[in-house]
Length: 508
Image 1 (cartoon, rainbow, N blue to C red):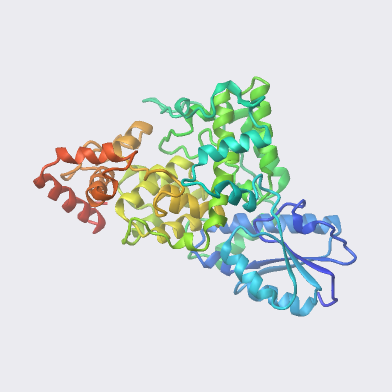
Image 2 (cartoon, helix red, strand yellow; image 1 turned 90 degrees about the horizontal axis):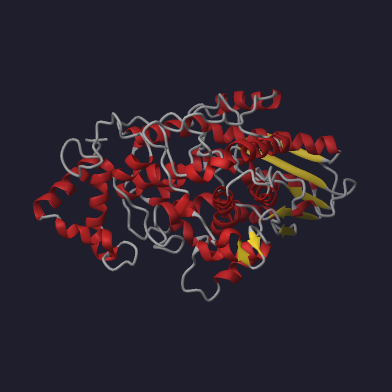
């Protein structure tokens, strides 16, 4: 790449959509595409092998599609260092008149690439993948005392005409959460449709071997790998989900079962976040399935809310509040992440199952993330930036704009209630109700002290004791805090002692 060009179009690893705004007006005679596999993107957090394979394999397939289309492309395979140094070199060698870049999904990357452009003009174009721009969300937030996803979601439904009957929501209700919280019962889920997995082709196999060699000390395993890495595969995965699992998704979306990582979930977040899928087509497919009588309204609405509501909402929060958002720690949580979060080696069956499947597949569904791994970290008092680094490291769908607000805001309450109206805390009874994990576990979710006390239950009461003054008048937590009045001084001391033992590694 030595001849000067008009535009050097930068394509990042989570921007694998040919209709991205950076490609607007692309002229193969005047412009070039630049892509780079930078090792720093797998090392600035300890990126799992599954996650790194997902990104690199999808990037290489997208690059091949650009070549097949005849676009001039400079592609750098895995190199040491970061994107900024690589771009700086590319600008020096290629001497473009301008650099074009669709808005990144990571504040750190945006700042690094701005600095790398130096004196070369850098055009940051709007990311049209999303239904709500950063400016649109800022307008929504302006003047509001509180930001709540439910009100934003209703705005999006009206604005985009999704699941609407005129100016009213289809079915007469905006959401069907009350119908979407069932557990499987004592006999489990029964027959489950198989997940949509894809046999690695030559490109992906090459990436797997590279990751196994270059990132051998990173968590998890690169093989077996079956995630979609092309648009065609992503579209196939979407169709199979709509046909086979969406009809039952709503009812069972919060349920868990040992040894069953996939259940009725979509497994589309990675394809969406790498932009192999467009959220509009995903939403339209779910709505069409309901309107065609193939899917219950509560399933279609619950799924659409995750995309049109929650996904757009957390991105809005991210760009509204960065960079300071990443440093928040409203509960002053001081502790280090337990080392077994990187291995799954714990006697707590729920955590062993959730972490084990995470390391094998780079995946856990939203309740496992919020109410198993996230709940434990919150009750334990893990410093939230460490929790953030773990989630960003281990999941194939983790891009910072979506992972950071979900972790710091929803899971860890580190923003003090900006994103979620209360900390999501529960005893081990919640996990007992929603799964089979407590069967055969050595810990009893009904006990908060003693040798068989469930660490979740102990830490729940310890959390309330530590934060009693803060939440005593909280509108959604005050009733839970009031239950402390039934616990005498001796038992309070026993709870604290047991919680200290959990944190010291003497229990779990």
